Length: 299
Image (cartoon, rainbow, N blue to C red; front, side, top):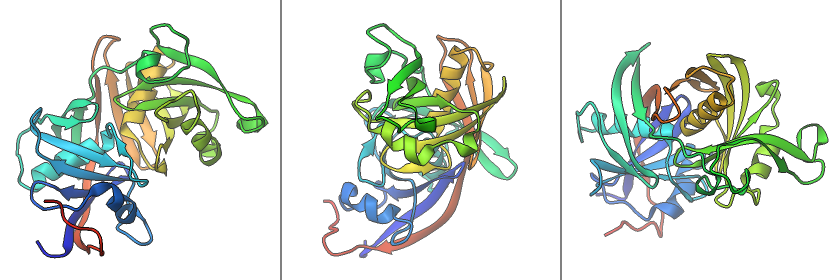
């Protein structure tokens, strides 16, 4: 290939991605490339970088990287965009695919169109509720779930100057902390989010969701994503929000999560069932970006 690197810009409910095709194209090492490509001023711009790879464990493998170059276990909005890309690029026309991620095999499925948008339904498997497996040191040595626990904060760093905050925690292949607030639009996402993300109680760091319960069928959510900052949407976070809220008894087993970039439908039939997420995926544009000196191609 030439010195230009082909890419596709996509989003899922406003959570935006740069997609690179490691099956079609030779790629340079990804970790050092992620920060430049995802920079919104000097690069393409995006929340995460997704890479299409072959897989021995499933139909395809998705690698996902944050702006800081760290690789993440799973991205639920990303898996919907990834699935749409595979169809659009001609890699597969299957209605359902198995996609290998660091957290296991995830199964996205075509769900038709709604309002001119492609919709994808994803089997997110069962939530991880045991503290040790999330992982978090909160909740004691029991088997979980970790609900309405107190997290000690640096003096004066909590809401209203508090030295603690109440939260719930779960993993959907990546860890989440869920904080209930009265007004999500005024939630301290930028100030409290990074404090919780890097708290010692979460050894792998954590994504932080701030939520407002609107009714038994609707929740408003904002997310501080580890390694990225606030994003317009977080699909695995929406699943964790739904699961912890259902376990707390404040919403029904089917709930709409209203994100700043769109709405996701989350279903969890009972405590032993898989979680299902349905939401949009869209292509924004395609292009080629020059490779800089030192960004040598693999292989």
